[in-house]
Length: 80
Picture 1 (cartoon, one colour):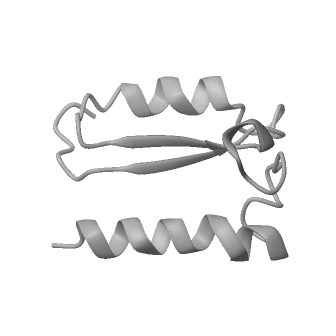
Picture 2 (cartoon, rainbow, N blue to C red):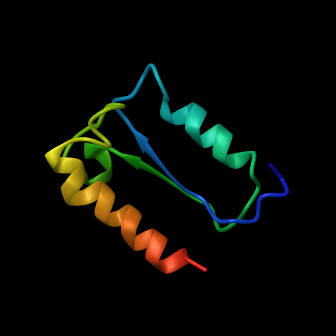
């Protein structure tokens, strides 16, 4: 993983406490050791519309409003 130089935008759902808890996602991302990587937790504490769970972060009206636009913005900014 240390050889991966492509930046990674990692999103995490605060309400996902079983499939992919935020702490595990962050630890996995940190193993890539790329200073351009971004880790973001979607939660009401961070100003988001809800504490998403594993499925709602990808398939809900709220994620369509705020999660996926941020992903697309990041992809546009980082495409090579």
